[in-house]
Each structure stands twice: as C-alpha cells, then as structure tokens.
Image (tube, rainbow, N blue to C red; front, side):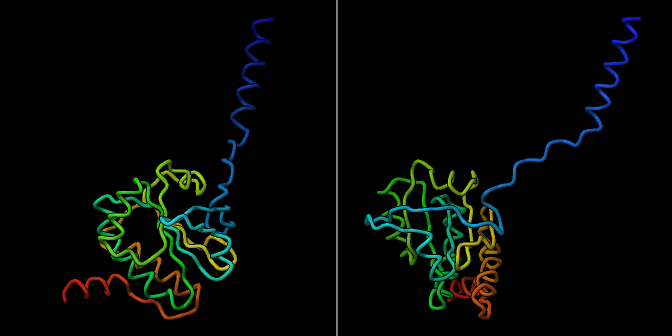
Length: 187
C-alpha cells in the first residue's frame, strides 16, 4: 500500500511540474523601447561623453566596436551615416576595445569624424548588456532605444538600415549610405 501511495504521489508531482508554465526569462533592461542605460565615458582627450546629455539634444548612435578587418571595412558606412545626419542633430560615438595607442593611430589613419572613446576592459559592453562586437544602439532624443543592431556587415547593409531609422527619428529624407560609400569608392 505504501508503495502504491508513493507511486501515486510521484505521478501527481510530476504531472504538476509538467502542467506548470516554464519560467519566463527576465526582461532585458537594454532593449528596443526601453530607456538607454546611464553611460558616461571619457574620449581620447579625457573629455567626458555623457549619453544623457547627448540624448537631451537629439538622437545618438553608440557603436561598440573594434578595429578588426570587418569593422574596419564597415567604418566608411558609419562615417557616411554620421556625416549625413550630424547637421540634423545626430551625435555618433564609437567605443573601441583596443588600447589607446592603437585607437589613436586608427583614428588618425581613418580620419574618424565622430566622437570616440576607448574601453579596453569592456565595461561599455556590460552597461549595454551585449557581448557582440560590433553592436550599434540608436537612441532617440530623450533616451529611448530605437534600434539595436548586432554584428558586422562589411557590405554596408546594417549602416543603411540604421540610416533609415535615423532619418525616421529626425523626420528627414533617408540617405542611402551604402550607395554613397560605394559611389565614393568608384571616384
């Protein structure tokens, strides 16, 4: 009799476990539609870049990146994106994970036209809850995350997509940065 009760109890317990909903993962704090995290970093000259100050003025594109060959090929598209919309209020910040000396040489060689900072420890990746490099965060005026784009695309499609999102956020015609960069390469 005890054995029958044990089997029945075990069966009921297993059935209850199967009927229960699986636990839902905790919602991400950094996601499209959420408020961007507090983020402050120093640029190459030691000047503070405060995301809240930037988003108070207009949209911001934060690019967590490196100098690998894929990111290097993609850089021209992001520089074109920055140039296309900076007059309409877009601020762009590239955060590199390499050493200061390597980034300084890279910035000079590439004639980087946007704000940049160095984060060799990767704290920025923790703040933005990502491990992917590169990851781009388009943050609207006021601080709401409008788009997140992970990964590298040396063909310029990610930058083109983000360009369209920037244009919609600031209500201006979109610039095809992919077409612009490819046209500049032919010159």
